Length: 97
Ligand SMILES: NC(=O)c1ccc[n+]([C@@H]2O[C@H](COP(=O)([O-])OP(=O)(O)OC[C@H]3O[C@@H](n4cnc5c(N)ncnc54)[C@H](O)[C@@H]3O)[C@@H](O)[C@H]2O)c1
Image 1 (tube, helix red, strand yellow):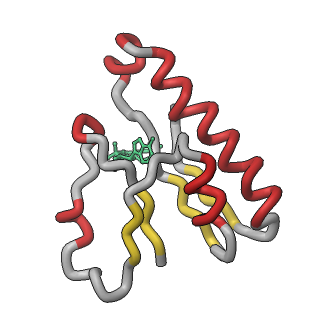
Image 2: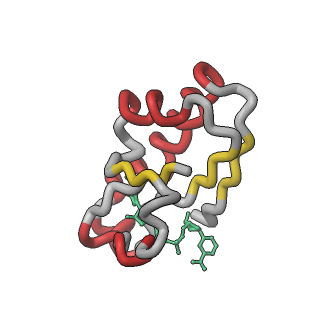
């Protein structure tokens, strides 16, 4: 299993949440806006739980371009990359935004 997270400090990701799983989980510090990294990581995955997102309403008002880049453009890129490198993957998309 691979976990991808940008760990941008303001966004709340914390490696402590994976403590005890070091043997079973490969952690990759990547940003879902980075299509090159994503393309390499998506191949061969059976299920993709897509939980990465900018979840602050306040931040989306202060910096709508970043919100759009993470919560829309990067999400669409992920789907396009899957279509190219892993069309059989099942994607679980949790976002409410
Ligand atoms: N928490 C809830 O009650 C709830 C309910 C319904 C849906 N959701 C949805 O589930 C998803 C996850 O929610 P959460 O509560 O765990 O949010 P969260 O903010 O705790 O976690 C989001 C994670 O995404 C990472 N992230 C942010 N931008 C990234 C980027 N550009 N590249 C890679 N990683 C990035 C953050 O570092 C963080 O670890 C969101 O899409 C949210 O809308 C959450």
